[in-house]
Length: 178
Length: 263
Image (tube, rainbow over all chains, first blue to last red; front, side, top):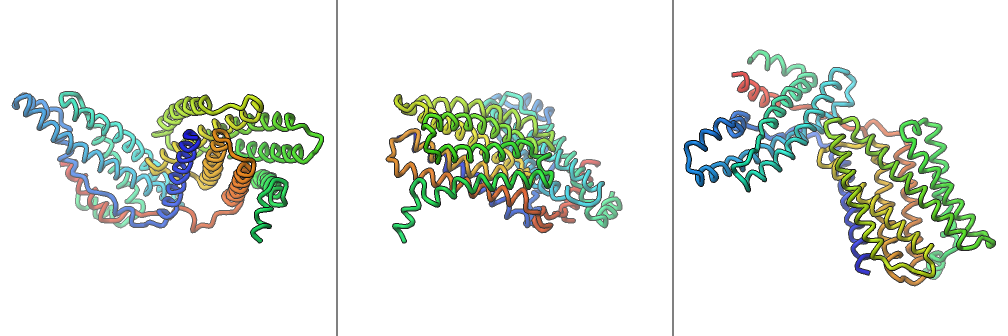
């Protein structure tokens, strides 16, 4: 009887989970304020946090206990940046997916690249976060988040290309300011 | 009126006949529609599943209403249909997964590995559930069929949950037809898992078992209608994904970041 109850509850939870995903997806189709969900990310600060030379400098200058404390603080900040990068990537996946239905083949190709890079970033951000959380327990271990930074920079490029194709008026301003 | 309704919830009532035959007839119509619209090229396993389910259910129905057929013969046919349907269901899940995630190489391999690992865990869990279930020594062929149903539905439910969870995590939208197929399979699998778990692990009276049969048949009927809607009814343009343009303020923000990168 206990087994039957466990299986009935599991089946009910599974159904609720699947139906809630389906319903929330259908509601999101008309959500055009999605692009506003992108959070700004200070790439310079992120780069400083992932800089191995800075870590080495801190390790050489601080006492081991102090270094571990500072390192943990830096790792927490790094985790916050990686989370934002991952979240932005999921928003860009959906923006890219919506542009896949465009009539212009150049826009479709740009959208496909954006989706691919955003998915890679999302996947890598997940693994990077796991490594960062592990490093929080062992601050002396390696937690290289530089690939995330690199991917995020590539993603910015793809998003800008797609944006340029969708809003042709904007690139003039961009190129003028460079 | 209430008595009439209760009378309908009996084996061999008009409703019982309808709920057993109608989904199979609708499945045959769906199969014909898929073939006519040439959708079967993208969904070969779905077509196989649709036709096999229809033929299986109609065969079982005819065997059930034929007085000369022995119960053991009926259960042997049930076993054969169950095994065939189980194999086709897992092939169908692989087909839906391929359609949903193959266009995204960045996560396709990760998804395949994840679903593979989940599958192994589910096979272990369902084997454990079957091992702890009470086995009727007198009617082993019946309780064995219930356990096999339960095992198939545990694995099917788990894989579907993983698939939906994976698509949610990466915000990947499934193609409309595959979403419909997966949704119908999920609804059917979850309800059937709950009912077969009750049948396989408890000693319910016959009346209650008949009610559970009615629930299963009604849900399957609903799923067939859902598949017809998702696969045969043409989608309106408004139902397609709306294009979301990147706003200027975000471009300006990214542009600022790019400028900082170039400095």
